[in-house]
Image 1 (tube, rainbow, N blue to C red):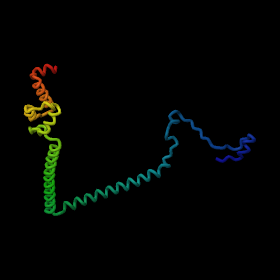
Image 2 (image 1 turned 90 degrees about the horizontal axis):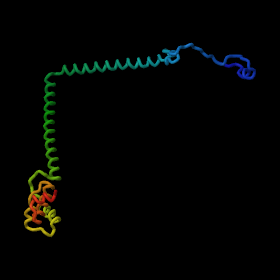
Image 3 (image 1 turned 90 degrees about the vertical axis):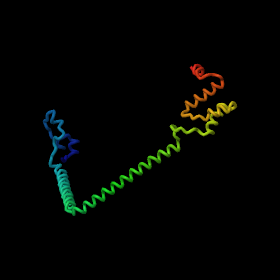
Image 4 (image 1 turned 60 degrees about the vertical axis):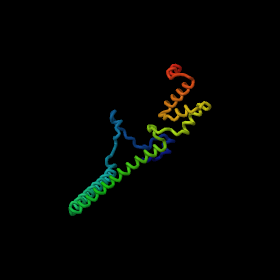
Length: 189
């Protein structure tokens, strides 16, 4: 709205022309809070038209795609039966050959990894005796000056775990001290 004589109104106090048009509605509680109050559907028509055009093009594309698939399927069905059987047999043979190779390679890898672990860490469950150098090194650190032929003979015994090894060493010390194994257990308690 235009406001003619704006300056005159200000200085004279005369009301010459209204500055703007104010609409006044009598609305109830729900009407005041209605989000869509004053919404005009025609203002959104161009957007809905764009979506309708897009959806129509999409439907058309999907229909053409489905027709192409059906034509390809019909072409495959119309091929000579012997050709497709030969192709199927060849494919089956290839798959079977690849599966056998896979199983063989898998088994080789399993054995190789097991051998690598055994080589690196050893096998605790095997009954192999420890090398004499290792046994002597362990015994010499404990009995450096009192090492005799009897202890050499007992040191060559295979120890399956550290606990058994320690127990054997304690028994040897007890026998040198003149104690029996039963007395050693009583002293430990």
